Image 1: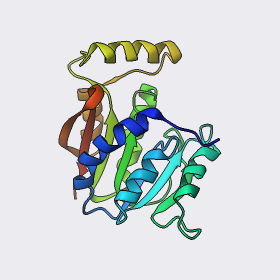
Image 2: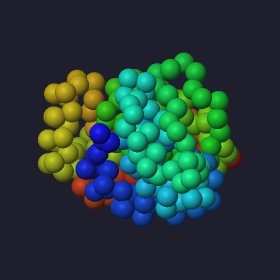
Image 3: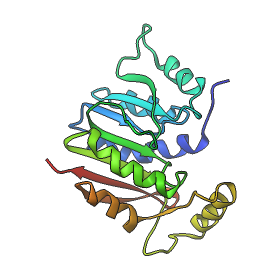
Length: 202
């Protein structure tokens, strides 16, 4: 059975409203942590000028992503949506590809802090000059939750995995800046989420 994420369906339109203008000049994108593949199918359909590459960890890779991609196929071709590649932020060698943008939704709070550090140390090398790194999810500010629901969500995360947690904006921004990324914008989103967009210096 094809997997389904209710949160993907709920947030996709709001995310698109922010990222579509940001990606207007981008021709290639790697999505890190594609999950069910719902975001990839929706965004690639609306933005056909972008070659959208999906990816997922090997232990989370399942036929679900491919089911969503197959449903999107036209005449047996994936067109601008590419089948997932295996990518774990902890792997020593990342894919030798260059893209105009990287996108990742609801991943940083699932990762351990060590994973987050690896993410920011490796990801910028895949970006072309002036490329964008776009991250969606919940963040804390000055060590404080932005809502009671985020506090409760953080408790839930830690109960499921002690290494998971909502990350602090300043901490992740420091990691990004250390890799030559400049914050372009911090966008407030529905349900107490954010979109953070950094640009690689050319």
